[in-house]
Image (cartoon, rainbow over all chains, first blue to last red; front, side, top):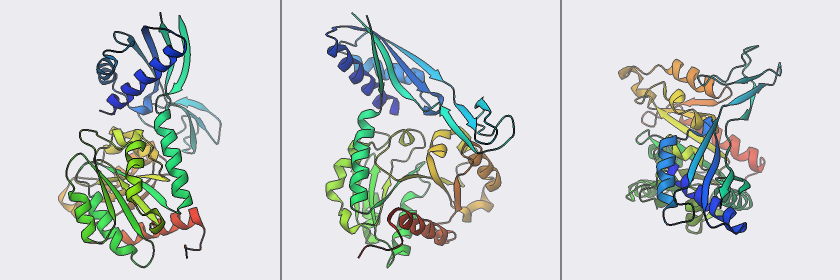
Length: 113
Length: 223
């Protein structure tokens, strides 16, 4: 249930951004979460609903974009998407790889009125 | 109207973690965030570690639990300074909770500070608390597929301790398979097999602690 802590942060970040622009209602929040973060969308949505209650984010739509884990092989430079938790180069089978994306967790933008 | 935000959701947490990390560096503390399922043997490991490190490095512990002070009481019996954090309902320690415990820890008299996280393989992996390394512990009574089920913690950790290997013959846990699975999600993960009952592997773990402490602070121990 770390989704609850994440939901609270999302609400705080969105409200701070909205207030900076003088907005008084948040309609939509776009969040990007890497697959490695293991976010359970239903739990995050539920937590968000609770945390947004009685704020300007109440009733806002939380749009969650889950991004895949993208890697690059340090040996042959092949770039590939991790499937089935296999961190092995799909081209040369080397396991010295770097993770390019899939750990991000951020509020991308919000829509306000 | 659309407002560009691009803010890391755990930015506030990470900022506090970075401040704690700086404090740990100044006080010459190697800090380890120990994560496992409930009952894997974190507190037993720390009891063994405190005894084994005597005369080498000084161990301190911040123990996180949802309720009760039992872990810190167990550690104090082994003369290990321990601060208990009861999280209420929270399933993990975050940087703020750990920072709130630091005034109760004598950092100047601590070489290795272990932050014993709440028993859980999911949530603690998400939150930095100022540690140098995360260490994940898996016990053979849990199942060798755990690294595939909880990949983040195995990816984020620098060391995997496989505990209760004295019980291997009573379980269907496949040690080789567990390591294959762990290295599938984290190819260069270090792994040490241990038993907190027989003491097997504990010397390797102590050697790891010494190596990492001296790597961080140089060969010379503090005066």
